[in-house]
Structures are given as structure tokens and as C-alpha cells.
Length: 148
Image 1: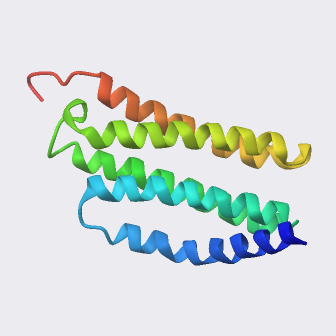
Image 2: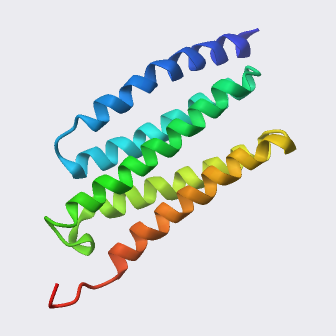
């Protein structure tokens, strides 16, 4: 009974986080927006796990879509900082990279929890997160050419 109450609280909190992504989008500083979006993706994964434990696959899928949207916002925000400062000199790239790496690990663990026929959705999310993570790492590790 206690677990059901915790799941319900997390589920209700997950619906409140959907509007938080709009607040993250409103952040004018792209560096801070990227970090906030990565944090939001982490909270959305918590909401997805709570919805799945409550047995609501539709809400789980919606929360997983929110994870993807928040992670993509983090990547897009970092690309906006590219024009201001080189990625290898921007500490926010490393912070977001570590948050995404942790998020990928959590998504992978969640993938093993869900039923076999539901894993495709989680696999697609994990693949997209890995692509974003690789782009961020590539931006940090690649030196810019002098003529750019």
C-alpha cells in the first residue's frame, strides 16, 4: 500500500513536470537552459518509471517522449552556445555530457524492467540519447579549424 502511494505521488508529480519544460525553454541563457533541460529529462524518466509501475503504458510513453524532447532541447541549447564560445572551452558541455551519460544508464536499466513487447519504445529513446551524447562529445573533442 505504501508503494502505491509513492507511485501515485510520483505520477502526479510527473504531470506537473510537463509544464516545467516550457519554463526551461523560457530560460534565456543557452548554457543554463541546456543543464536545466538535462535535469528535466532525468525527472521525466522518474515520471515514466512511476507511470509504468502504476500500470499506465500510455502515460509511460508520454513521459518517455518528454525525456526525448528535454534531451533534444539540451543538445540544441548547447549548439546555440557554439557561436559564443568553443565547446572545448565551455564547462557546460561537460556537465550536460555527464548528465546525459547518467540518463542513458538509467534508461538502459529501465529498458530491462519493462515487458519485452514494450522495449522497442525504450530502445528507440536510448538510441536517440546515445546519438545526442556522441554529438556533444564530438563537439568537445574536435578542434575548430582556423578559418572557421
